[in-house]
Image (cartoon, rainbow, N blue to C red; front, side, top):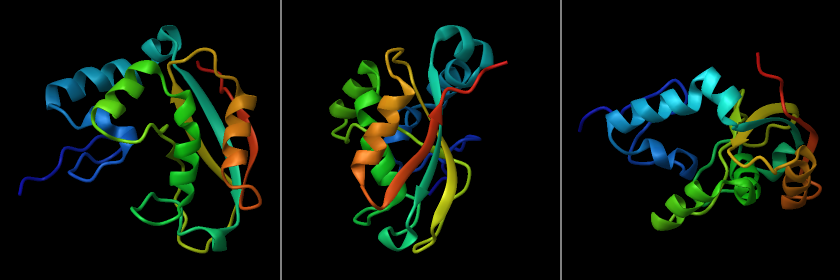
Length: 159
């Protein structure tokens, strides 16, 4: 079997999360997508909205950060709650592929099963301009009350 394509952000393989669904096509599309999505000038002008999210969670309530089929993980809870903020184009693509409509949270570091985090930093972006930090906070906080709590959400300034 050939080695999977990789990017600086996530591996592309037969088992990919829904947040990477658009990266599972051809290498040519991958190059175009990564230039458009990750190019700083396009991100600043083109209008994707990025949120920095600082979380706190009780480790004994989860099977670690990383999404795994059939397990209760922090990433699956966070990304599931961010699904309502996904733009229409991505929503249609996910539904077409039969995947759940979820956001994609990029995390600074993963935790193992049972490890509690006091200030876990992750980010999420959307092309929707109507999303407010308070809405993101409320969505995540309501997903697992008493187990997972947002400390702060804000839009970092771009240079």
